[in-house]
Image (cartoon, rainbow, N blue to C red; front, top):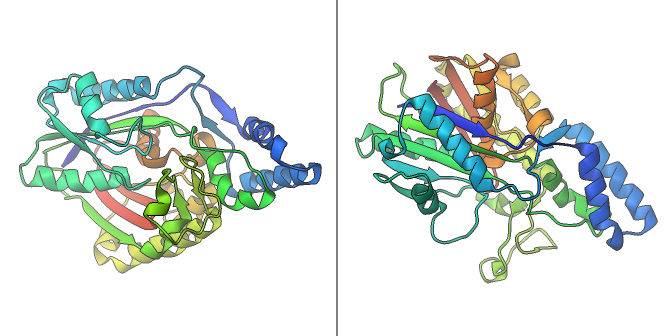
Length: 342
């Protein structure tokens, strides 16, 4: 399996930590006392420093997620020298979506003129893109499909809310680091000399650390950690999630003899925190091989690795025939690692 084309489209508007904090305080002010306001400000600023957050990309009012997805698709098709009707399968993997049913893939198939393709969605939080690569690899290997596009449009800043009590920062802070991006990745049949390899691990007992609840969540779950389950408002216990990632990711890598014996020219990891990625690189002795774009782009959810790959291509860091190691942690709590040749 080869990646024949990859595209990324992000908003031009750069939003700084200071702008995010100002917006948060305006939204939260009606619910906080003066002493609480200062505590929220100081705590959020401290967490920005600890995580390494600096800025992220956000849409202007009126910009549509669809338009960014279209640009990413066009870039990927041009890079692969393909037309829309060359695609056999479209897998939509974004947490960002306009509806629950039907699959977002059907809309994009229609809009982008992929007349010869079928499609479906995969939803596994930030891990969705890597899950699609895994599934796409086996489809291609077994001759089911020839050209597969993996698409996301992660425009999720709507999933936020005010902080009504300083204690809520423990599960609301991650909202503030969200960046926006759309990516399209075209997978095709072809030999690279080294077959892709994937490892996944899930600790389901930590499912309650991160969610975007639906209004009917109580009908499906009676064991939620978060005390404030506002419908469609993203929450994440960042400290607990990072502890899980720091434990599970190196353990998964070190338990795999296949991953350890494979060479790595460049590595990409989920952009959830600069300090988390730096720590992973140190634990695994990857040094400066790991591309870490969290300070510039924030957490772009399932788009974080392909966004970083596009940046690396544009900046000469990623070149054909390089061996890549891809690391992803995801709500659930799940981790995934992939080795493949670009």
